[in-house]
Length: 180
Image (cartoon, rainbow, N blue to C red):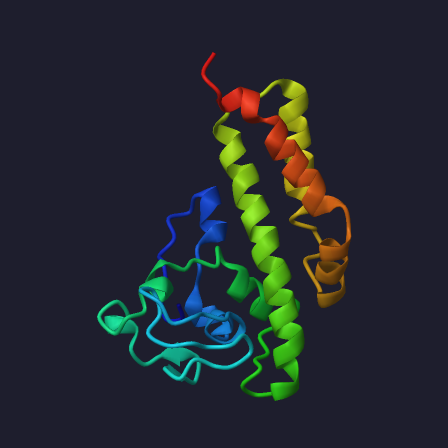
């Protein structure tokens, strides 16, 4: 999971590209995994992966060979660096262990924000009616507040109606993707 960095080309979708150098290995700590074909051992949420050294994976160059295909496939859509840089102003749980629980909560919520935002971005390729395009744009804007995200606004997002509103809007677009 940690250690992969994608180069960006200046396109709007680049905002979803993970930049592990600007993260604090949140995926390697916050996420749980079970021993399977994708993970070589069990790891509970909140426990740093045993391969994590600082903020980098010491087996990153051989993850698949070591039995961590799930890490190779994982993509946080840029949620990790958004939490570290935007919400926590570059701070890390490594420097202040008390930050781990709130960073994990923010990461969970930001992953949801990024998932929904990416789906709305994909809806830009659909032939939408003007009203649907305007609604898509309004929902996209709500997922990218101009003042940025905070721990409090992410918690309010999770408790609020926006995730359900986006999901309902996306379900309503089925007619735009079905062949007539």
